[in-house]
Image (cartoon, rainbow, N blue to C red; front, side, top):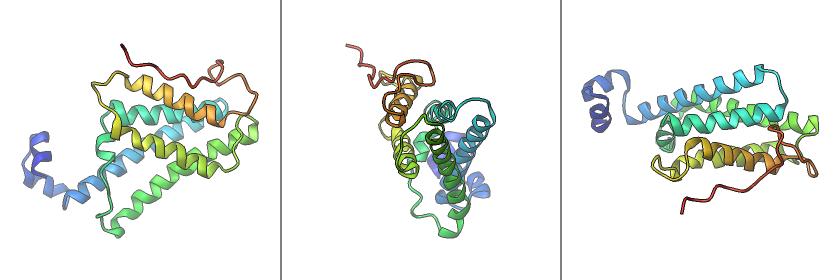
Length: 183
């Protein structure tokens, strides 16, 4: 808490006025982050376009929030020590986001864009991969957040795209070619 207070330029006592302990602070931060993702999901669902277009935008924006806004570094903090009674609201919101991603995958299957035997498993795999990005991402690395988001989303959609399809929502053939590090 002291390090956080110093980083914010406030006293440790000020933090304790708003947060009971470090776990409370981390939990509230997780809630804040999932609220951003839910807003992205809501905005993309409301716009015109195919479910593939919407899924692409949701995933890309979700990754960019984690990387560009620096939110991902705190999202890797484990909440296993948070009291169960305080986790309920966060878990509910996290599950709502996961269900929204799953629904977009299912709609893509129904539209004929995606082949996916189990949208639930696909959603877990995609979101699990995204949640792992902050563990290996470095702001001073060779790839920008935008490049990482584009490559990851292309990879995810290529795994869902109907076999034989030659067009992604961008109008390009699916490509798994990742950018090579600068030599």
